[in-house]
Length: 504
Image (tube, rainbow, N blue to C red; front, side, top):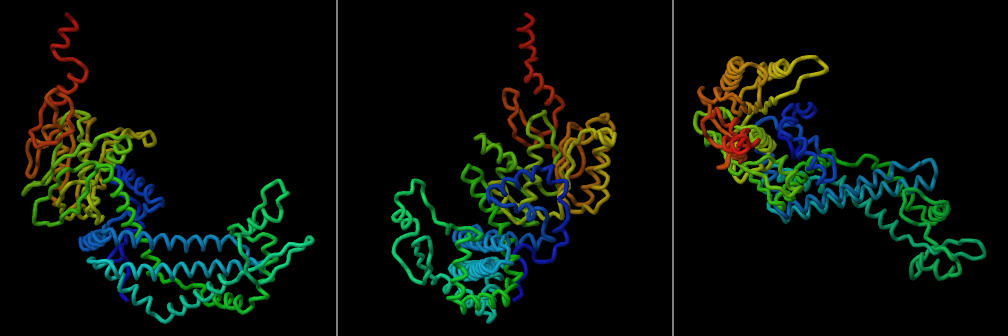
């Protein structure tokens, strides 16, 4: 039994590291929050770190391809729900004060229920996965591990003991007789319900009587007394419970429990993806061929799409590709034209590809990148007293000093407070630095000069429609000096004709 993790092929030192700055810059936190809401459980920690290498990313991608299959998804969701029932039994057990003898018996009964849920969940998953076609090394490895674990003599004894005791408890039936202010208890069964008995025997009581045997973690006083009787009448069964609790205090397999936790990563994203698809969003499993061009068709900002689907608004998509020798897009154009949104969509494309999940696009091929680096425009810091330019340089410095080779870089509006001449010089140096490290990425800027020259630089522009309004479409085009000015003139009604009409 060699299987270890459904998430990682190797031990990952980044599991406990804080999230990178790109999480906020790319609005990924908003997407993960939506995933957690759909799953109704906090699974955000699984989305905080990348696999250690491309093999790890491919491992996850293959697992997710299996999980997307309807029968596999349903089997795994049912398994997680059964294991949630086990966890609920654990929580109930924790609430009890075992110093009182009847309550101690109740605590042992919850322990039996906990173990029974565990055994039943594993047995059911084994049956259901046997009817599925699994292709990924991860799920096939777990299936093999599960079969070998279920065949162990220790597990078979655990399951039989839990089943025998549970059957014994379920077989206990009592008759309660109320007469002359006394309640007598005896083994046996009667027809009808306890609540029906109350209505029949006490019809004159104006208020509605209820059973004291409702489902609760704690025993009522009456139940306490009844338990004393039951324990005496079924002493062998309760001794078996005590022996079981002592012998199987720790029984769960750590690899199994790790799988229960980690599989929620795939299931939570799959549920989220299905909800978004129902709302009209498209996803695809990206290709990852490094010897083919990197491209995306119908690429969109997933965080923005989460908002737009709730508000029933359209999300604009764009196409992009890096051709041979191209390393950086330099994106210019009018304000509010969709430049930052497009840059975020590119970063999200790389993020979800690195996570081994489907990407928000109609089709894509995404190269392997060692990491994601982002730098978005910041405001002046009141706490430090530094101006905006210094704040940007302070954050940029460690990015450029770090080992950033083969990273994907997203830079948004750097050096806006510097003179154009200085900003152009600094901007070129930033682009040259990352290009020299075999990085790829996008630089959003108001400086058209950055898009005019440079090896591997591609000029993109946020386009206006025929009326001079933002179209939110991004296209390969030379930077235009007047694009922003024309947009502002149209936006505020300052064209020659409009001014002439007003002043005339």
